Image 1 (cartoon, rainbow, N blue to C red):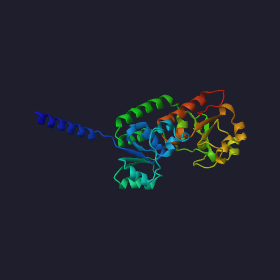
Image 2 (cartoon, helix red, strand yellow):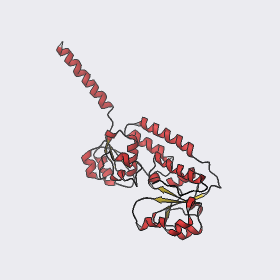
Image 3 (cartoon, one colour):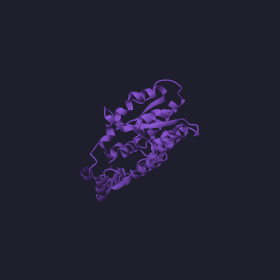
Image 4 (tube, rainbow, N blue to C red):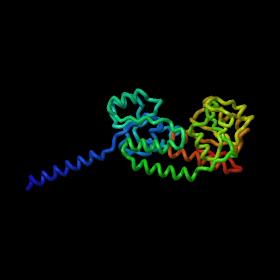
Length: 283
């Protein structure tokens, strides 16, 4: 009787172990800021074996507070080999050696390109969700994203006001980029397209002031007093675009394609509606 009970326990334990293995979620590492944040949105905390240090930088990452609880690592081949994750997420332009090391060690490697439109975001959410074994989470996040996008999207018109996204060193955002698509959904025409600026390049402040857009968006990408960033606080620019005519949007909102990118549409729509009032910004 004791032997029979013992064998029953062993068989039951074995069955449970098989079930546990069948449903075990993969261990995942990320080598890119944008995949860091998609991983934080989708993964179970115990799945994450490493994010990049940028995930905890609140100037760059919207989920920086959540990342404080996750392990971080430098995105190197040595770290990938040491951690031996099941899945490695990365970009298409960075950490190439670490990505190759992951492939050679047998990990599933997923390279996510930069999002160029809001339509890319649901696709990338599902790519990551499927790779890390949580497709149901991905579907829920996509559905919430699409509902909010539909509610925020402004009908487009040839009479929409113009907006210029002005970044460090005087660069303007051109067509075919995520910020450009955000502008369109918020009811703005991209100033750089109208003036024929079809690539990211330095745009003289003097020309911007002489031929101004209806709204100047200051794309702030970091803290400090660098020469590159100081251009955004030039007194001539502040005078020309005083009050409601300029808007601060931190680059972290559209640096990566995330559900939080929709917050930038909400800010732009508020600026669109405003007739008077102080500058609107996220601290």
